[in-house]
Each structure stands twice: as structure tokens, then as C-alpha cells.
Image (cartoon, rainbow, N blue to C red; front, top):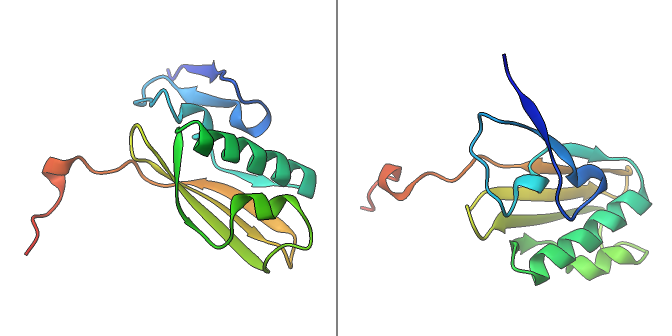
Length: 124
């Protein structure tokens, strides 16, 4: 039987998730570890604010961005397809916030956990 427990952290809304007890957890990014779609502009901008705070606090590294995060708090948006890629400083897990502003759809997705160094192939 699989047991689930709520993960409660300083974030609310979509960041409050249910996590399987059997999975390895990172205390830094565990509250961000569920994929979800974003339903409206207000929700998207609230997530942007939380991510700005997470980057400023050192939880996440903003690895790649099609525009600065604060640009997403005003309209018009800086493009039709916008993407922000993050990495947890503690465990290295990758995350992506992407938005198709033309069609009005956005999502938060989680990448695979990083490979331990000993499992990486050796350089040529």
C-alpha cells in the first residue's frame, strides 16, 4: 500500500502538493515537484512572483529564459511563446515554466532528477 502525505511549505496554491513517501525528497524543491497546467493570467502571474522569490532566495537558478521574469507581470507579453528554465541549487533537478500567450495556455513541468557524477559518461 502506498502512503501519501501532504507537503506543506511556505508556498500555497499549486505548489502545495501530495508526495509519495517512498520517493527521495529534496527539502529545497519538494514543494515545486508536481506538474500542472495554469488556467488563467492571475494564476500565472502569482506563480511568476513565487518564482522570482525562489530565485532571489537561492532555491532556484534561472538557467535559461526567453525574457526576464518581471516582464511577465505586465502586458503586453514580450512574445507569443515564452519559456523559463530553472534548476534546484540543492539537488540539480530541472523545472520549466512555459506559456503560449497567443493561445492562452501555460504549464509547469519537472525534469528528471540529475544523474550522479559516477554514472555520467567520461569525456572523450
